[in-house]
Structures are given as structure tokens and as C-alpha cells.
Amino acid sequence: MTPRTALGALHIGALLFGLTGVFGKLAAASASIIVFGRAAFAVLALVCFAALAKRTRWHPLTLRDARSLLLSGLLLAGHWVSFFVSVKIAGVAIATLGFASFPAFTVILEGLIFRERIRLNEIILVVLVSVGLILVTPSFDLASQATEGLLWSVASGLLFSLLSLNNRASSGRVPAVQAAMWQNAVVALCLLPFAAPGLSDVSPLDWLWIGLLGVLCTGVAHSLFVASLGVIKARTAAVVFALEPVYGITLAWVLFHETPTLRMLLGGVLIIVAIVVSSRMASGPAPRNTSVDAGAH
Image 1: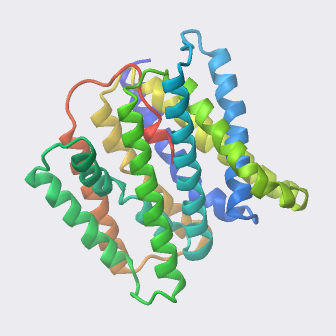
Image 2: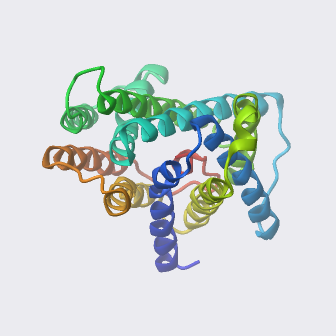
Image 3: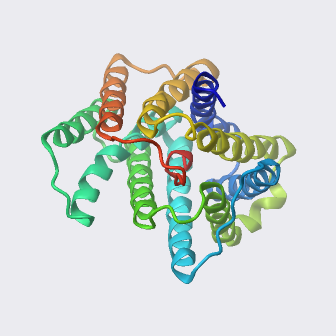
């Protein structure tokens, strides 16, 4: 893969991740069913990718690896459920922007958990995200759907941040595709008891949206991300994936007529700028054993 094709693959991956909320809204099913289906289809897609990829390595799992993957799967399940609850309540735009708060959580939690000093530019990042979220919120009435949905999406961002930190703590011992496959399997098993009673009521069209969500927005998007990181630095990839909210909001605008207000757009710009700033803080080449952080959403 050349740098140009890798960059193209990253943009396609970002667009597919941006479709996450769109497919979630199109599917007339509960959040638990959507997440169960997404995880199940993602496992199938990742298994196929691993079978087709010539250089896929499988790492024998230790007990420590298994514990880490189990925790990551639980965090991923909570992240996805809270995100799709937000989509159902407040729409794609607010859900996507609320989730985009995760870099601020990562800065704060990383400093607390790994006892790393929080720098001035990281404090500015937290402030930018916080102001952006205030602007995105139409009102601060907890009884309003928009505020409730934003709180769910911010919770989704917090869980995603914890997922990222857990992946960092595991030091990337398990190859990315293998880790993603096991984490999605954990998600599917966790959500099966909640989703099972309503599976027979899901229409074929809804299964199509859920299948596309699992295959395209999870399996294919994650595979493109992993493949491109063999050529492109991780910080460059993070900047490209900062466009995910832009894709998501634009698609929601076109498909669902979720017209963002000027205040929401300004808040979104601040959050996206914060994501770009946070990605520029990273340094060094991309690791060969990349975790599933950017592919989790």
C-alpha cells in the first residue's frame, strides 16, 4: 500500500465510521439489538479479513490477555449501547459530537491513571471540548431529549476513553484484528440476553442496516485503519479521523434533515479542533500492533 492509497483508505474508513449513527437511526430496533447485531456481523467480517490477509498473525492468549480483552469488550459494549441510545433520543449530530468529547476524558484520565503530568496544551484541549459541548447543548433542561441524549453520548465518550486506556495498558500484545474480533465476540455475548427476546421482531430491512453497520462501519472500517497504519503515522490517521463528526453530521443533515444551528456548528468546530490538537500532541511512528481505539466507534 502506497502513502496515497493508505490516505485514501483512511478517509474511506472515517466516512464509514461517520455512517455509524446513520445506520443506527435507520434501524428501527432497540440499542441492545443494534449493538448485538453489529458485534455479531463484525466478528464475521473480521474473521473473513483475517482469512484473506496474508500476514495476519495470531497471538496465543495468556490469562492476562484474556482479562484485558474481556474488560475491553465490556467497555466497548457500554460505549456502543450509550451511543445508540443517544442517537435514538437526540439524533445523529448531537450523539456524534457528544462522543467526540473522548480526547478530553483521555487527557484527564491518562494523567490520573498513569500519573503523567497534564501539560498546558492538554488543559486547553479540555477547555475547548467543554466549551464545545456547552454550545452543542440546546438547553440545560434535564427533561429535554437533546440534553438527555447529549449526556448519553458524553457517557459513550467516557467509556471509549476508558477502552483506549485499557488498550494502552495491555501494551498491544495482541494483534489488532485478533483483539477486535475477541472484543466484538464479548460484546455479542453480553448483549445476547437483552437482545434475544426481540430478535424475532426485527424486520429484514432493519437486519440490512444492522448488517451494514457491523460489516462496513466496524469490520471494513477497522481493517482499512489497521492496513493504512502500516504506511501512515498514527497522528496523521488521528487527524483524518477527526473528520468523522463532519461526515456524520453532514449525512444526518442530508438524510434526516437534522439541520444544525449556528451555535451547534460552532461547538462542533471547537470539538473537532480539539481532536486535531490532541492528535498533534502524539509523536513517533505508528506502531505495528495497533489497538482498536480508532476503530471502536
